[in-house]
Each structure stands twice: as structure tokens, then as C-alpha cells.
View 1 (cartoon, rainbow, N blue to C red):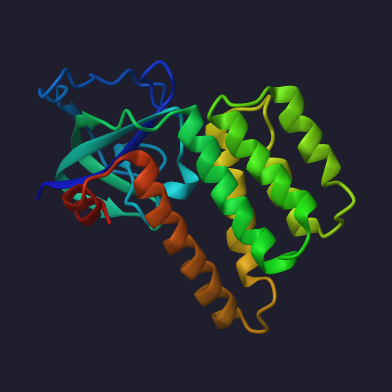
View 2 (view 1 turned 90 degrees about the vertical axis):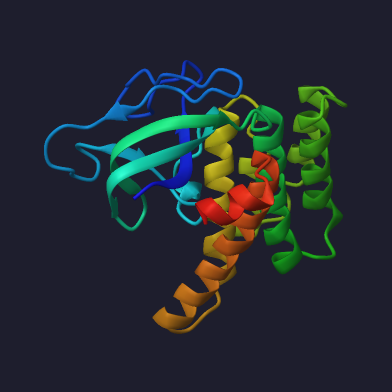
Amino acid sequence: MNRLALKFLDADGRGSFSRFEWPLPRGDKPGKWAKAEGELIPCRNGIHACTLGQVLNWLNARAYIIELDGRIIDAGNKLVARRGRLVRCLDKWDDTNARLFAADCGERVLKRKCPHDDRPRKAIEAARAYARGKITVASAAAAAAASAPCRDASVINAVAYATAYAAGAHGNAVNAATCAATDAAADTTTASDYAVAYASERRWQGNRLAHYLGLTATEKEAVS
């Protein structure tokens, strides 16, 4: 049964782990089908993709809508299918939007942990300005350094991931999202409450990420 999902590739159009060079879509024409032979085994054999709820572990430089066909396994944090083809490049996803997403995630931590401290807030604002090309990396780094006296570990990490200017933007987005989800659940007292709080923050992140990916309402519903 066919279904749509999300697929992330590196800047060269290759799978992050498989290094498979994917046939890319051209204009309105989907890429060619890729097929996996043999037994489908998550992380080892198959066409791997993800839902919007699974996406936060798989962000990379380039994003696509992928059509899956044949048998599809939901492995919890990924989908594994017999066949797949890339149908649309989500070209809104770039370093700018990855950095803006990381800043949004970091800001969520600040609102919970230090709502009245301007220093980390200004660091997040500077991260957004840098992402949009409005200030230099030196100015943005100075704002981040000024937030250092705020010693809450979650805030330190949130600012660090949002302002790691020399590192890969998509990797920082993954780290910022994980930091924010962990912080959202940190004050719970039971495992079930932790799971609920963590999942709630992840849902917010998925909805926010859909905006930065440029998903249409129909695509968002299809990949959820």
C-alpha cells in the first residue's frame, strides 16, 4: 500500500548512513523508484523514511517527500519499505530554517527556566538575526557569551545548540529539539508523566518543523 513520508539526505543527495545516491525529482516529475531486495530489516536493509512524529532524529541537509510502496514496517523511530521514490524536494529546508528551528526550541527552554533573564533571550534573538544574515557571526557569538552567567544546565545547552555557528545547522536542530524535549519532562515525578511531557513537546516541535519544511496541509496530514 502506497503512503507518503519524509526522507532526509546529505548535501550530495545521498543517504545519511547507506550512502545510496538517490534518483532526485526533476520539476514535477518524481525520481525513479528504488527497491530493496531480500528481507526488510530496520537499519540494515530496506528503504528508510520517517513520519513527522519520527523526523526529529533524522534531520539532514536536504528534505524530500517520499512515496513508499509495497510492504512497510513501522520500526518505532523510522519506516522501512520495499520500494520508494522521491516525489518533491522540500526546498524551503535550508541552513537558515534549521537555525531558526533550533532557536525556537531553545526559546521554549528559556520560557520555562528563566523567563525574566534577558541574557539568554538576547542570545536566541541574535541566533535568529544571524540565521537571517542580519548580523555577523562575531556579534552573534558575543551575545551568546554574554548569556554565560546563567548557569542552569538546560539553558546553557539550549543557547549552545542555538548558537553553535561553526557546526552543521541541521545537527544543531536535532540537538536543540532533544534538549528542549528533555527539559520539558525534567520536572515530572513518574515515568508515565515523563513520557507524556516528552511526547507533548515533540508534537509541538513536529508541528513547528512542518512550517520550516514548507509542508502543505495535505502533505502534513499524509506524513503524520
